[in-house]
Length: 315
Image (cartoon, rainbow, N blue to C red; front, side, top):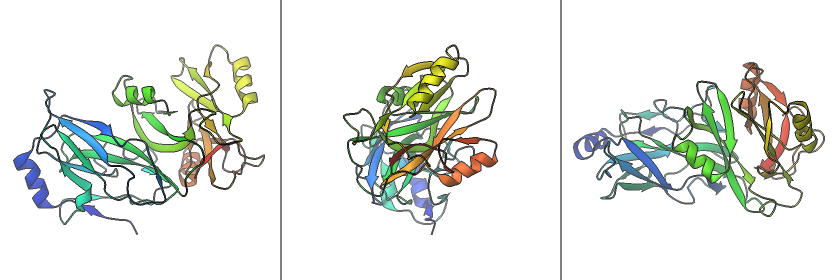
């Protein structure tokens, strides 16, 4: 059953009477969480709200909840999905009652936190959005959550997906400096998308049998390309040296699929899809329904087996 989250009229009136609409909401902590078979966050989502002059806003009601409000930018991707393997949309309405765990009032420093329950099930990946209660503002902050069935081996980290609406390109990274720079608008046009999954920063963090991912960048197309097949990495270097620049052979670590594209127990396939465009771009997803929707829209599945698996990640 799809959970319905509704906003009380009294809370909207409180927000109007006692708090200003934030010009900016900044994440303090709680981003890129890995949750294990639970419907509650392992740590709270913490933000600070500021006005247009950069002063902290006190007494402002914020909604910090599963990010499925159609009024928020990029809560859904261009194919209508709000996450990987999510159960469906969650709608915010203007009447009724709300779970108190989904809202918080900023303190004198502009800080607020909430720890409301998830509405999805493992394995899934989705966003938590912090925004002013009642809407009417572009101020929002997004947190990535990956919900897994069991504790993965090693020391995992969350890979975050971004999207550029003008060139319609996707990009993934688990590097803290890149995530922060993109979130802060250092690269114009890029916004958080709905996707994320778990991988490993280094060989030391990864379980036995893990392999490295190579990463290429094309300044010609403003696009990145990832592969877990070292032969493919070598072929790209040889065939397109002026188009694709090898940035690293160890972007992150994953498990390989077998010859027919299946993953070991406890892991799920990551499908690689190609946009078949003169401006080439690839997307990496763990959601079979999203993969099929993209294929119907003209994308091509690459990789092994029917899923187009290029590597495997914890499920």
